[in-house]
Length: 401
Image 1 (cartoon, rainbow, N blue to C red):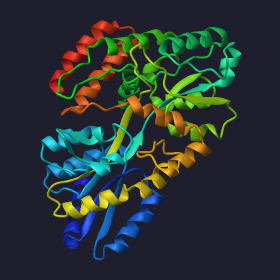
Image 2: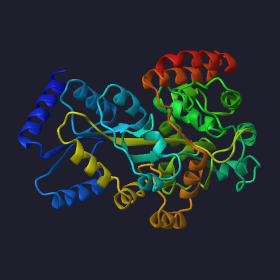
Image 3: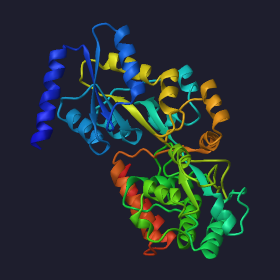
């Protein structure tokens, strides 16, 4: 607590000295990305008298710190946040709108702007974006007598192939993350969006208890016997590590897996996520992180200007196409086309955007997330049947809207 207070006091003192010429920025991570360092300097050179003051805060603490400072009346000008939190910030009058013009909206891939939109207004500027695709180990497919060049296209094929691999090789056919961790909910949402499902509609009605999502939860139950032992002990990066060791045949993962696979001897492939029976086309959960502009800093307009600059098409593509960070491009461009031509693994990560959907926006997002995780875990562990688990979760999340 003493350290937190000391940090808050120091930040307030620095802001006061800057006399409204400084834009403080809570930057999540271990270090500032070199691309951002480069363009911060460029922006400062073009905006005499203004300074960007990033404060690097670890992923586990950065969002909480931004929230705490804003609630205390000493907000930073700008912070990197999960777009899922924007509704809560907006309803508590902690951030200002960052509306986009129609021309700005058109620059993004479909459905991206929805991830930062609440009641028809944009409340953040997307800065990072991730989608998932299916990776498969061709060597394990071959060992199991499957065609290594033909990955599953449907859930039914995926479950059947996972079963064959487990029975023929003894190696898990599918990596299923179900740890008490946020991406357990995320991983399930990829199945929701590959079966035309929706957790909450545009009018705020909870639609979790639907045939489309029930089918997804039943498919989860069906693939458990052919997954790694004890899925509740693993989150997605831990499952990815097992895949990189050749100890599981299929996983859902982002571009970061492709970057890491290049350093292995595994023969692998990547394709769009398998589809459920009600799918209209390739889908995936669309997760974005955004720059939120906090109310009361005194530099809201200038912070908005900088946020739009640091996420502008040329800067953004240079940042996100580095590969290792696991990001998917936010916008189509000739540069993205060049990367797809050079590294075809980008293609399925982008194709899934077409029928993808955003993280559902709830006022109490953590409450919603915890209910979803509990739902998944109860089915994975056999403590509840899909129908009962779904009805229970649907009732709980009504309180979190």
